[in-house]
Image (cartoon, rainbow, N blue to C red):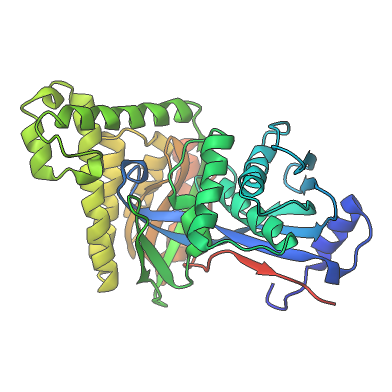
Length: 398
């Protein structure tokens, strides 16, 4: 909210669920979702990723409480969740509240919060689309709870606390990328993040002729969760096999193409599936570094070709794409002015991301609206975004 005020709609909704309140007694936090331009399934292998924050957010309007009670009302789910900070935060229904409960427990255990909040939760990030709606919610809620208690956390520690909430508390496997970019994104920049040591650099992405199109397939196949765990196990298996020749390695991040080729003559070469999984991760790390270099020199053609290579590897070697995502990439490739496209997120549904000339955006949208329903039987949703800023806290007055 550019004027620093809670919108009339949010104020009305808050009062409906939590009673009368003066705007000056409220605070508001916003945290963006993200789209990963390249670097997929590299994060949990200590590799490189290159996301941007998108212009879609989780928003929380909160009133600090004097006691330890937390009450959250989700506009999307039309549901209330309640828990207490008096002692270890218990897991409980509804399921979406686990992310907030985990954040609260991380901050409570660190001695940072003891007062609760009444909070209205809103989001315009598509759920289940691989755009980090959960991480965005975690970061927005963490900032609200900290602000209500007069506390702050350094950005990296904030991202780590939110990741703990998702991984260890809610039990949802993810790398650090989602929370990290939501907290530390800068407008007009992509982030090259090293998931091994959390070092990063901001890479300019501010060209008025270039746009990022996110296209949601509106499908999510149920096998995603189990397959994600399997891919992680296969990557670990590849590392274990390679250590026979390279005992110093601890992750696929440390494996070069030459090392992988040498490993083919040993145990790794006897399991072609695991070899392909490792090949994707090793190649994707290099593609991500090459993409960042191309982005810095505004070589859009090279960026686009690397995106297509990434999608092919995710489809054929890592096998986490699906027919709907493949169709969307094929449609994007057919549109003049689109430099590149690839699936983004964990896979088996969700979204693709396309790098396009802005003037080609309407042509891409029209092609998707015509071709995708014809080939897949239902509509896709799409939006154009720029690289957005990270999370923020606002204290409305009035």
